[in-house]
Structure formats: C-alpha cells, structure tokens
Image 1 (tube, rainbow, N blue to C red):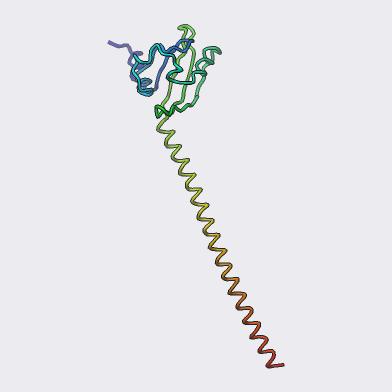
Image 2: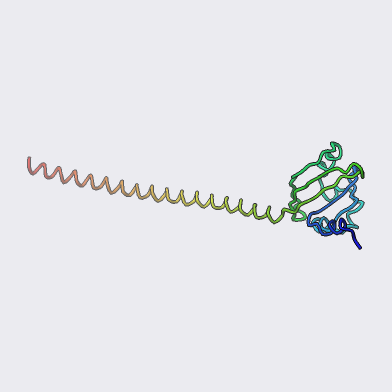
Length: 164
C-alpha cells in the first residue's frame, strides 16, 4: 500500500520534477509526464535541458541555495504555459520544481487581449468613418450655405436697385 506522500505525489495536479545539480532528471510525477507528453521512463535519466530547454533558473537555485517563486514560462511545443516554483533540497543533493499549469488561464487572457485589440481597431474605424461623414455633411452644408448666400445677395441687390 502506498504512503500518503506517494499518493499526494501521484495525484498532485501540478507537475513535479526533481533533478541533480548537473540537471539530470531523477524523479517526475504523472502530472509532469502529462504536461511534457512523455512517460517517467522516458524522462528519468535525461538532461532536463532536453525537456525544459532553459534550465538556468534551476541552476541558479542550486548555486544560490535560494528558492525562486512565480517564474512563468511558455512551452509552445507542448501547448503549455506554467508558473514554476523551484527550490533546492540540499540534504538530498537535488533541485525540485513545481509547475502549475496555467495554460487555460493564459489562453483566456490572450483571447481577451486579442478581443481588446480588435475592439480598439473597430472603434478607430467607426470614428474615422464618422469623421468622414461629418466632413462630407459639413462640406455639403457649406456649399448649400454659400449658394443660399449668393442667391440672397442677388435678390437683395435686385430689390435695392428697384428702390434706388
């Protein structure tokens, strides 16, 4: 029977990875395997850079002994966006990482940004069209006003000649 810690490891929805200071993957949980589309057997023993590409944060954590929290990273090849928590476990000689899957939230945020961008473009187009229409109306009113003025001046001149 599995211990509580083993069950937590297996059922944690966050990707969990443990690696050596040389960045060799030692342990992964099922969520990490799902995120990076590989089995534990395929991942364990590999250099973490082969999977995660940039492991500089893991190296910094090991060298400094200080945890890093809230590092966000996109992995487009896995259609994945995560927030990482990385911390050293000096007693065991390893670096551990927790990866919280933010893909759904990130896609929603991205869609909202696109919607805002499209809305702004549409508002600009409507304003430009309204300005164009207003200028045409003003032009027509100006022409009509000028024609009316000319006609009224001629009429006034005619009336003044008859009186004069």
